[in-house]
Amino acid sequence: MEPEETAPPATPEAATETPVDASENLADIGLSLFGQAQAFLESLLRPWNAYQLAIAAGLLLAAWLLRKVFGPRIRAWMAARQGWPMWRMRILAFINKRIMGIFFVLLIWLTVWIMREVTWPSRSYMLGIIARLATAWLIVTFVTRFVHSPIMRTILRYGAWIYVTLSITSLTDEAATLLDSVGFDLGEGMRLSLLLVVQGFVLVSALLIGARFLSKTTATRIQKNEDISPSMRVLVIKAVQVVLYGAALFVGLNAVGVDLTGLAFLSGAIGVGLGFGLQKVVSNLVSGIIILLDKSIKPGDVISLGDTFGWINTLGARYASVVTRDGKEYLIPNEDLITNQVVNWSHSDAYVRLDIHFGTSYTDDPHKVRQLAIDAARSVDRVLSHKAPVCHIVGFGDSSVDYVLRFWIEDPTGGLTNIRGNVFLALWDTFHEHGISIPFPQREVRMLPEAE
Image (cartoon, rainbow, N blue to C red; front, side):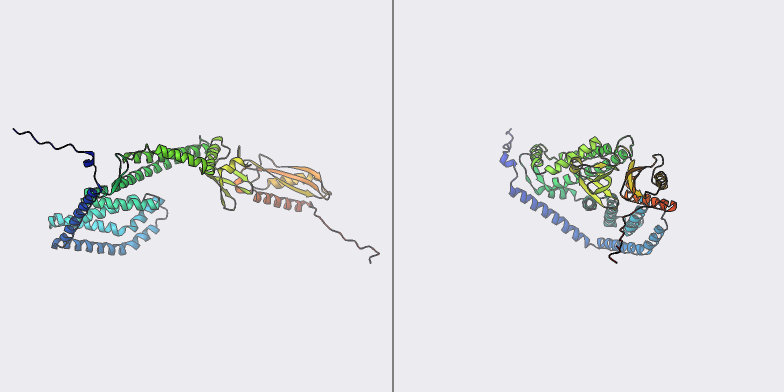
């Protein structure tokens, strides 16, 4: 009995695919796909395949006509449902926009069922493929509608359309082989191919969408928790977002086989760059964390910084959004809120005391003036009654007795200038009613007898 021949052990050079072999494999795959496409086009020339395509075209025309008939009626019916919730109206708007595709899917599945159950079951193969493709495309369009980002929605929609088309036409293996053949080696044991890039993008995108959904859900629940202070809510929400997005990116890259150990050097380089080139950015980030931890400023507080007066709308990682009474939104860096003097009108509570200075004539009784001023302030709606207004004499001027009227409000976000104006107007009406005069500078010119 002769001994069996054994193949010589494969050398590393033989195991490594050369660029020539890779290009030959790519050419073979391309020729295979070209042959399949050519055979598919030739099959379309067969009589019954052409008939099925003609039937599909006729059904598409019928769906278009049905849209022309029922589209305006559906829009009129939607206009009469103004009291419905917004999510229902959005679903109806989507259905109205895709009504032609819905009609086409219903008609083609009805046609396939009739041909399989009544007439020619074996001659509806291509119509079945078209029906499955139309149904899958419609479902993908409906599902991706829930993605809020227009760019991400478009990418996911077209990617899902391509995948379901390849899956239904049984071309997924050929497409995967073609994508995997396009790539290059990155060091030992690591090969970056177009298939790996596509898989990584799909997986990381799905995980990021899931992380975004979880972060929004968590943020909503945290915002409703009254036991947590507003600044701590913002800090917790930011921490949850960082953890979820970081975990989604790490898990996604690790799942597709990307070696993350090389990121240690990258993180060191980023740290050096942050230390030198991004000093202001890091300063704002650290300042934002300090603001959230010491609770000196929180969303809803009324502050004034220099000439800017408004209330905190949001606290971001780099800046704070301050909305003024005239509708302007100032994005103030967090560093300015730490290093500059900030007046927080509602730090410990929402009560704010305002002062108004005025003067009356020396002929008026100051006791009566004080009482009239207090009554005038109390008559204004926003002035608090449980923190009673007070009026004091602050000096005897050249032409008037000077007073200060102090009163309290609890809604500084409603504005300060308008409440001062209302109190001044109430003082004017009260003094005019009771004969209290407000002196003002006058100039008197006398003509001497000699001049005459």
